[in-house]
Image (cartoon, one colour):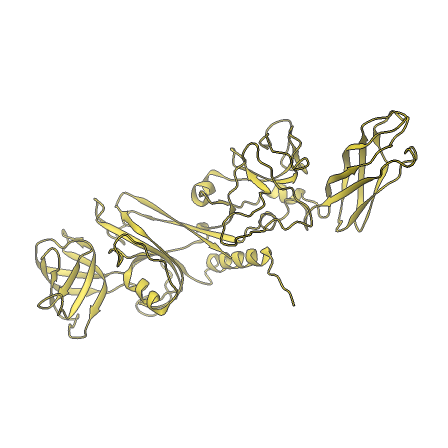
Length: 462
């Protein structure tokens, strides 16, 4: 038995995921965490899937921000047009999405390109595997987006698919990926089963003997579609005839899934070589009818940002004191009272309101309650200290049960030596260890600042 999951299966899953989040059938949050250093300093560990890691992500959380419909877009591997490159032409029997190494981002076949104007084209004909030397574009020579293809002077033929708007480029464009866009005029102009390309496998010989007209109606298309009308161009009208060097499509027809080319030339010289012509039929719906499917867009980018302190919900301090080393995705966490989390931003640290502080607590230091850190009844890690309001934001709390946080208790900074009395404890706004952890990304330290706009771009490959 042999089976295969097609690229469309991944596209379906990507779109389904996007729909569930956009329609609020599930609540998805981008999370930042881990302000303190990794166990081996600057050595970033590879995430692993385990219960311990799930608990660790929650213990290290600083804040979460909800993903909205505008934060998601299908993406494909980015391919920039480059001079003197041979691009792969579309044929109906070629697996365009092949990857020898499935962990690679890009497909092995370069069959589409983005030009310097952010226009995206699919290669329909590569002039017998020639190098592309002319960048395709649609604003010269009367070329229109709706045309079946754009022909460049290097012999290539390209199908225009879409242009990336500046806003989507800013949000969903990286060194590896670019967004997929649907342009209605391209979708509406697509024709199912149309023949746009005729491949001349062998040009034959002896055609059109002693006839001056080189624009010949000597071919017919046999198949399950209708209305295809093509002409061929012959190189010579001499007594010994000529070979087929080109063609003109009067009408590509429609609804073909199979098509063979027959040649009948009453002026052909006997015993001369036969031509072999192959009709190239577009994908289901036609070129441009379903850009995501045609480009294999089985990846979804989530792109959202944390802006400064998010109106005070995620406190920060200038000077690089606040940091994170981990980004994650959590689905359907619950608020502290037990209901579904649906808000935009949540603080996931615990806030300590302090009395009579002495000294200044240091960011990322351990605080403890007890005689020594080694024998402490309670420890935590400082994510942020607001000295003006005497508020301490901590996570990674370990309490042996002897410290009653409903009462006051004393704390000491293990590095700073600062001391204070905790008079009120305000827990995380989310209920810890709820929801499904979907994604983890570990990194070196990234600083946060009240004036900074930090963009998170996560690509989910289905």
